[in-house]
Image (cartoon, rainbow, N blue to C red; front, side, top):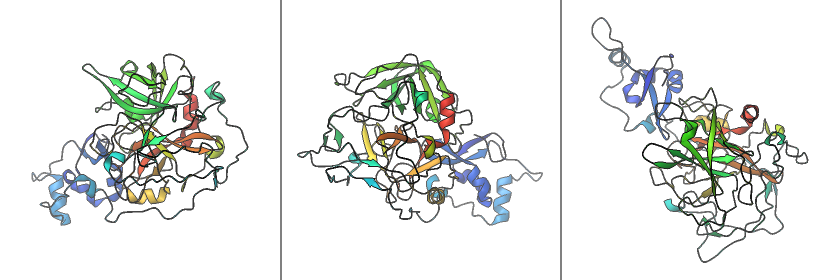
Length: 409
């Protein structure tokens, strides 16, 4: 990693760099992640020794009154504010109600159901309305979806018109999220599910830039990735959607992606061949130009993935979903020491419990607007998973539309 002074460093616990406690600005600039959901600070590789043989850190401790014998119990509390932040009440956007209103209970209480959107008894079922849509404030709902750069994808964001039955919080039929992509990484010894993504064109997958790099921040080769489309259960081979696997031709990661802070965490995977469309494989729409300045605060988008159902747990083989409220960026910025810029979008419940988690990285945060599903975020990082007071942080797609266009040949 790179320190706040621009020198080479190593991502470690804050207890190893107590001098950063004296400069809040440098502390925030030094934020890094030892792993995806474990934050730390970028410490210099070596401490300078003064002429008396005393290390710089020791001198700082001696002159500042910091008790060198007392360290934070763990890295998470050391970089959090002392008081949990909660988003201020925000009125939801006007909702165009479906013809028939159906109430679904959404109160999963155990870890197994952490990423479940609709949770109802196994003995019951519900046909979810398909015409439920948000009308965003300050936007035109009459203009056509401008996805000309996605070639012939006039059907983007419109899923199969079939009915969906939700049983015990899991999808009983495929095709609900036909743009979902499962990205696999092929190593010398094994192949593993690596990240999520979304189909945004005839042969392009939108995902997170951190999914394209190893722990040394070296980019993987394109040939190491494959993408499966139309998949719901990663362990089944008899799904009616007949999932297909595609090789990756080229990786287009944002050139200014920084693992320190996960800035510009966005990438496009170019597939080696055109995707075969079906009711189970349809691209999602990207936001139109009039969403450029839309903050989405108060909206309730959906996040979908195959990630773990709790922090440190085993990844789910079955696609899961949850609905999360979007925070104001200023509230999210108050919750994290890392600066939350306008290129980020935060979503989650102040009390925790529902969130994207490990393995969901790169997946879409999406909202139904103007009658179609549009992608407004990419799963990037968070403080563990579903931690009270800490929403998940997403790459804000509206800030990168021009960059995405330039990478779609």
